[in-house]
Length: 203
Ligand SMILES: N[C@@H](CCC(=O)N[C@@H](CS)C(=O)NCC(=O)O)C(=O)O
Image (cartoon, rainbow, N blue to C red; front, side, top):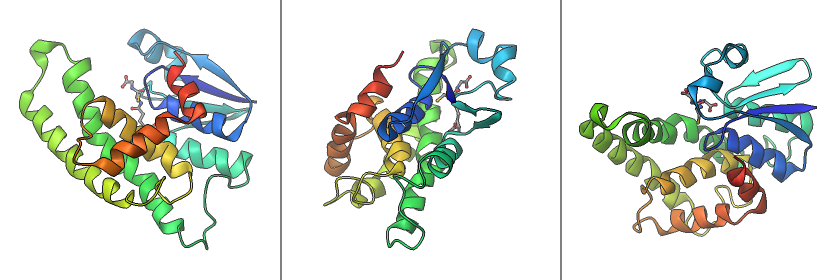
């Protein structure tokens, strides 16, 4: 049985979304998004930095959301939601899958730290402004790629589970402007998927 170690409003939602899209059974260990749970000895034993998501599959334990997505597709769904390596869309699939943690999430992290996590007296307006500009630039190519497409590679794929979730977070932070109409429509499409709703509503 798969067990997902989860906290609300986090990247752990990507894994709930994926498991729901695939119709795979799983258990969930719900923690609070709070140091008391995430930095506890019990959770640090699962993830050295005390972060989520972490997935257990029997004796196997794995962290890093992208690695977990790839692991689930490889071991549990025989490559579902992923084009084969000879498919013409495979390179773009890989590109957008990894663009999520590589290019979009670093400025998203800074924005969350500078607007939510730090107490007001420790926030840095310069760092916040720079992260917002960086995120805007990182989202432009995603907006362009989505022109004439419903999802990142046309059909819905695990690249959407990764980058679509990051776009949803960017939009929630007010960083998807009306100048990115394809991206706006994409976020709406993602939000309307029942499996995504289940993931986001999980607390
Ligand atoms: N690159 C990692 C990032 C993991 C991560 O930073 N998770 C955040 C939640 S979105 C977390 O657990 N933060 C808690 C903390 O920093 O204390 C992944 O994709 O899994």
